[in-house]
Image 1: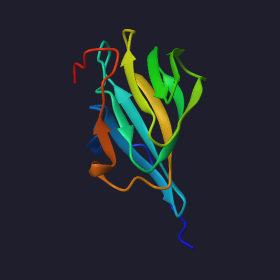
Image 2 (image 1 turned 30 degrees about the horizontal axis):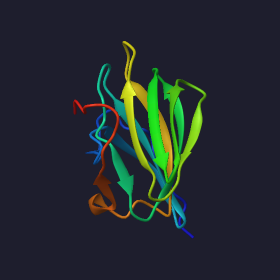
Image 3 (image 1 turned 120 degrees about the horizontal axis):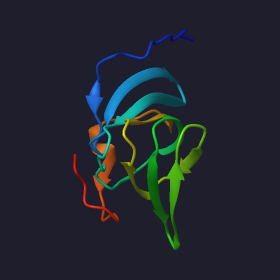
Length: 129
């Protein structure tokens, strides 16, 4: 067993397939965690994941998250304290509607396998990133 400790970085470690900034956090055998940031007024690219599910917890900013899975579809207002799940294969897109970045901590189950995991889908908004 490896004990993993990671501190939130100032600079992004990567840009996610949806265009948001990614700061990597701890990873374990069955899941990984990251911090996502979308600049004020920005709209992410709509994507879906091939094999992973995610749980997001919003920690700063305000905006909206659209999700579609089968016949179920919804757009929810997001702000600090809101959490939501993104099932495997669900389409999703988010946007930062306020004057500050929209930030969330996400857990990916199983751990994020790499950039080929996400693929673009049709979303409700025109992406800006």
